[in-house]
Length: 254
Image 1 (tube, rainbow, N blue to C red):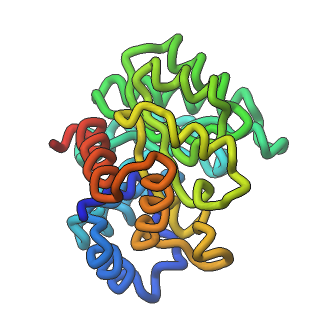
Image 2 (cartoon, rainbow, N blue to C red; image 1 turned 30 degrees about the vertical axis):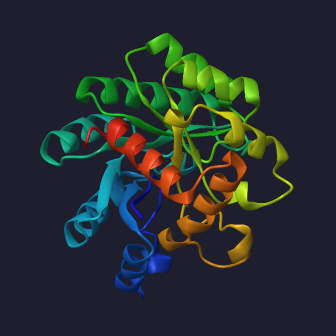
């Protein structure tokens, strides 16, 4: 098995006691690569160290909209300087979050658009958070143009999914698809073009149905893989190969 976890916050403090064991379990499960996206400026150096210590971990750097109060305008310029000296596979995690009403939408838009321009400057894909903001994220991508990437933890409609892959963007699918009640998501996964499908855990969050209430980790990606394979009527081996190839193409590591 050759799997890519396209989104896992391995730098999260919940992994501090047993990170080496977590990475070992991932390897034993066939997870060969794990993309580790940042959430704010202070997380970049820790992710760089983590990815140096664990070669299967791949860094992405950005400013997550939920952590808006920790961001400063100068952090975007710092991101540009950081990327010049610290190779990354993507700019992320970035995006918009309109679920949390206390987050200023105009400031979110400003950081999001500036980081999209940074990604285009460096020819890097973007890893995007889009909660209650899918249509605006999509329209912004279309307006700016020249971008590629993934909406992680996709939870939108069939129409929103189609708009994204028509723009060449991938959908990141994780633990939520393993719950039988997620009928809309399951319909999308069952019929979507395979070339736009990525698997993820979003560890330590969003555990699948088989690990409900537990800390999520990359080894649990096999649960997502099994459900996706069943939904598509294909083998787990074929889905693993296809989604890892998609990740390699997106990250330009093939």
